[in-house]
Amino acid sequence: MTNWTLPGGSLTEFRSNSPGETRALGQRIARRLGPGQVLAMQGALGAGKTCLTKGIAQGLGVSEELTSPTYTIVSEYEARPSGGPPLPLYHIDAYRLSGEDDFEALGGRDLLYGGGICLIEWADRIREALPPGTIFVEIDISGETGRIIRVFAGDSREDEP
Image 1 (spheres, rainbow, N blue to C red):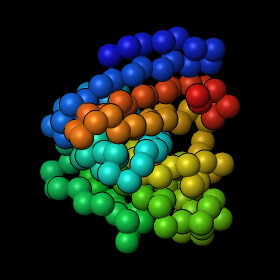
Image 2 (image 1 turned 45 degrees about the vertical axis):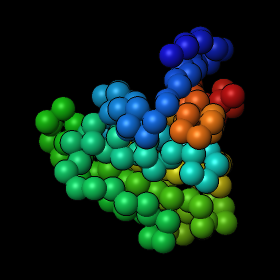
Image 3 (image 1 turned 90 degrees about the vertical axis):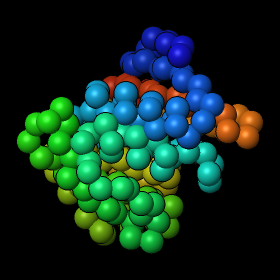
Image 4 (image 1 turned 180 degrees about the vertical axis):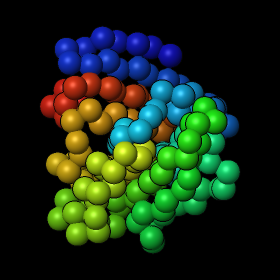
């Protein structure tokens, strides 16, 4: 793990050598998420976005197995972070959306500002719809099972690397 402090935010870089390590990182990230937070993921097909999301969901106390929402676009789960009251967890796959207008048409703004936690795969397709304070995650493939995962938390989209 490498940490950097940047103007307007911070960047942390992790290395994962297996899907299990990626899920474990997701569980660690989950401990820092709360109501109203948005986590925007990007990475190539097969980079591990859904794997990371499964770890986050597990860390948030979601009891059911997450599936890739590619064909449904949005899947909703009940999270119980730290054993607290239930909280909606929205798993959004923006891959099939043509942009912010498509996202808005399916109630995207309500999801982003509804008080739940939003995990968005292929977030670059709806970048302009993302609220200030969004946490950005970039996953790069490094070898057969290795991944480099960068988490950027900043004050605005303009601060994202």
